[in-house]
Amino acid sequence: MPLESFVQVNYNAYLHSSRAFDGKPQRFREIKADYQGHVAELLSKATQQDALDATLSKEDQEKLLESLRSWGALDKNYAYVGSGERRGYRKNPGGGVSARPIPSTPIGLGDILNSKLWSGIAAGDVFDMQTALFQPVGGMGRIGEAFARELGPLIHYNAKVVDIRQDERGVTVAYQDARGLGPPQKARADWCVCTIPLPILAQIPLNVTPALAAAVSAVPYASAVKVGLQFKRRFWEEDEHIYGGITYTDLPIANIGYPSTGFHASGKGVLLGAYMFGPQAADFTSMTPAERVQKAVDYGSQIHRQYREEFDNGVSVAWHRVPSAMGCAGLWTSDSRAKHYDDLCAIDGRIVLAGEHASFIGGWQEGAVTSALDAIDRLHQRAVAQGDKA
Amino acid sequence: MNARLQQIVKAHLRALACACLAAAAAFADSPSINSTAPSFDGGMQVYQHLCQGCHMADAQGAVGAGRYPKLAGNPALVSRQYVALTVLNGKNGMPAFGVPVSKMSEFGSVTLDDARIAEVVNYVRSHFGNRWRDKATATEVAALPHPP
Image (cartoon, rainbow over all chains, first blue to last red; front, side, top):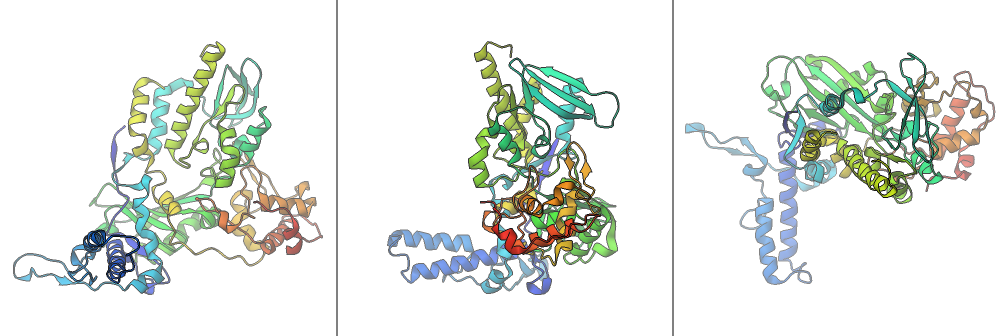
């Protein structure tokens, strides 16, 4: 399965607030450089005004000042006056007689603080988002397809599980054809690794301990919505020089994700026009698919004026409307984890659960796969210890 | 899983998985620019912006691998307290809408205050063919057990 680079952080993408800078999107590089520069200057002042004497030795204060100049692009007086090399220029440096750059003007710290755009700066610093990242060519679905290819006829498709019953020797799972074809069937095995999402499992008759039953019922699923928008041309590249990465906004669409591949391709292009969790996702789930696309275009046009002219087509996925999942991912809280997580993962007689819901990497395929590897390791040990065939 | 696949999966797992929630999880882990929390005016708006995502616009519910209960003609709606408790505390996959804002999950819960919950309880019990006349009040909802 071939991989390709996934662009998470793009300094040329935008941070956008509908309530700041007259609704005009700001380049990530400008907000980051100015925020960092202003903060570095403030901390330099505090240091020079002896505010850190109780915390740092004089020698360390000198080192701190030196580091702040580097980190914040401060001048020789530890002031931030804007740095073309960080935030960019009004006119870029070039060659020949028109080579000289024209500096740009930094945004004031107060404006940045009031805009809340600072909250988009650290997105790419999160452990799971740090560069370099990869994606399967063709999308994340290729991973599931690879499992299907390798496992072949072991997988029964369209099998809707209706009952899971264990006894001292094994587990019987009753299932029906989801399309209503044929009579109900049963599968029998010594052990059962159950990866059914919890909202569905909570509705299936299952004879397990009260602790596991309580855990299965204790985890609601997060609401999430994605909207894909196809445009007649890749205007974000042609007009705005944005190649991959993500624009963050306070609008309900939450962000716009640009494709990480196919740069400079002629013809149509697709971007992620919305990716929402929480209340906005619940709201979009409640709309018709056509309304979701229309709303994503309406909101997105506040960031990219080309939207209306270039829009071609769109699709959406609302995870609560996915019949096999009924939600995006386990909506754990620290309280519910403390109370139920270990019970959810424990081997219960001859049944053990696996899936992103049984992991600390919620919502990720990695959580699902690592939980399965952990579960089958434990099952193997249990089986061997009991003298069963493993 | 055969050895080759296992090797591939182990080697690339973290990298592969990253694309799935890349935008959202970063958002979830850091303070969000997105502070546009929807506000609702009355039970109909709560229903149309939240509940119908699962229970559907006609309150007929839906059936897939699991099911979303239909609310139209559902005899469980006889008890307004039961409906309010379900909205407050959730049930199985249904989230608890009474979770305090301070306890929001990393993926963003939806919190309704007691007045909104009373309104939506009254709305579903008096629409979609349901004709229950007794009304829940915010005071009554406030007295019911809320999620911790």
